[in-house]
Length: 246
Image (cartoon, rainbow, N blue to C red; front, side, top):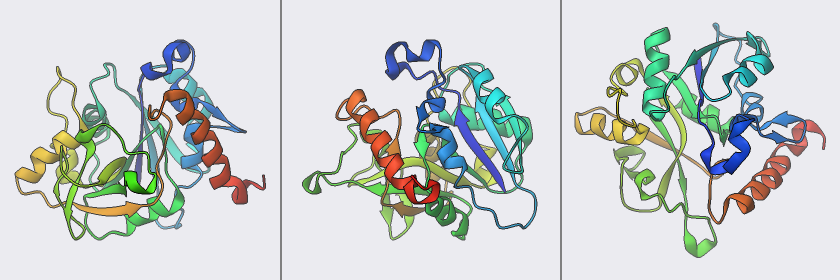
């Protein structure tokens, strides 16, 4: 299985932090934020897994920390020289390594629990989005960015850009080579993942969804950046406490 972590962003929401720290390497307890997801990568012992980092801002910090393998998984890197968006980052990785089977891809500033990795991997469709149901009436923090609202019929995705309802894309996908080879075509404008996927939906590509009850996103700004950071640290330590014996 190919695992692809998108970790090229500058972290401009973090004010001056991006001058000296890659946002995905933000320290939370004994590990950088990004490593908590990597510790959850599934290990089935069948075949050879590969981990790819798409890097950009402060790439040297990621390369120096993870090196050429992580917990026995070979690691490789590809640089996104311009910050042109998530779909462009995926296209950069596809051009570099030519994935010929489905790849699991996620945002480096997203915490991915083990069960979320398992859910996208086990789904029989090669193209799978991970969604979170967010409702204001039950106290969920509902993202203000309506671009990431996804509409479904059952578990089939019917719209994934500016949809309706309360299902939001969290930034974890499994994409087959048929999609990977057609994503991020522009080299001049920001290439948003969901907008690219929406174009492919309109062209007849089949996509499905799995649900998660958790969404820990380091770069979120609701209700504020500072409050989100405090909540991320609290929830991440709570989530990983049984594993790490804290």
